[in-house]
Image 1 (cartoon, rainbow, N blue to C red):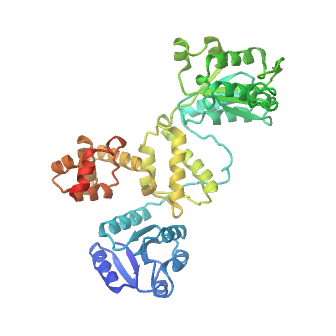
Image 2: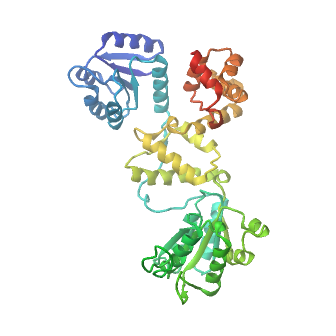
Length: 463
């Protein structure tokens, strides 16, 4: 049971909402102006439904005062006007949701449920400090990451060439930077090159430089990345994508510590420490003739393998704390709490995109957050669906709520019918409009391959 304050100059609309929400078990207070609403706003108010356009001060004008008076109170703005500017202004001033009139009761109930449920789940405090937001910190307490840290410590002071392997998004450049930072030349330059980002001719010029007139467009002499990395480290990412010609040139650099810029007649010396990385199996490419065997052995004098995030879930909390601290500073936010439902969803997901995907999810969620709490309704739909599916499979039937059972059953029927809504309705014994409402209510997302299914067009013609 929650305390809700409705502020709207439309008396009939207030009464209608009061009767409905009382029936849902909420305690309802009414006000018909911003001034009356501020007087009625007490510390025990959990949620305010605030109309934008009212005589005297508008809801938009009063919104900052309500947020200041009740910082933990959720606020839903309502309006009969469909202008983009009001919506944007309301969200920027701290509104939690925005609903148009005439009010769809199901939409309102869903919004209230989300806001009030998440309000009771923010007990998990994160020590997410923004102090280290600009540093590229590596964290991990898992055995795999401890081995990575140990190897970095042993190899950093030596000039040995290091090959870093691991799936995309595991943080291979962070390992390279950590090696450089702990090396004999930490104050020297760290130069990164993505070997897959440029065509061969541009990559050669980028790595080794060129003389004036070496090719069309070479209007002047330009130093390459190996020259820029002198007295420091050069990091060659996605080295497995190099052409045979570039592989030969790189091998010469490793063998003789020299390179020749495009158009130059003499070679230049380099003392740059070489660190490479790949997300492909170089040994397999050696077997197929796609990668030089002699270069392969030159590159992996020391090999550091980064485990995928799904194999080191015990590192997830530490990663979340560091990433949230960094994102807070970058986005000027102050997220310091995370709901239990959010944490469960993050822990149950397998993270095929690894740490990079985790950072992207947190970035989007924090950008959309309205306060200091990261709630699960801000997460992408596929994470919420995965968590709901995992919960339903792991929990005994008698421990599941009716909504959990219904959501799981609907999702399974849709999957079994390849998201053919007509067939799903027949199996479930419900109408198409009701199925649409349930899909929206349970945040079920149509898979890409079924978004253009023919029965969607049929549905639009029959409803």
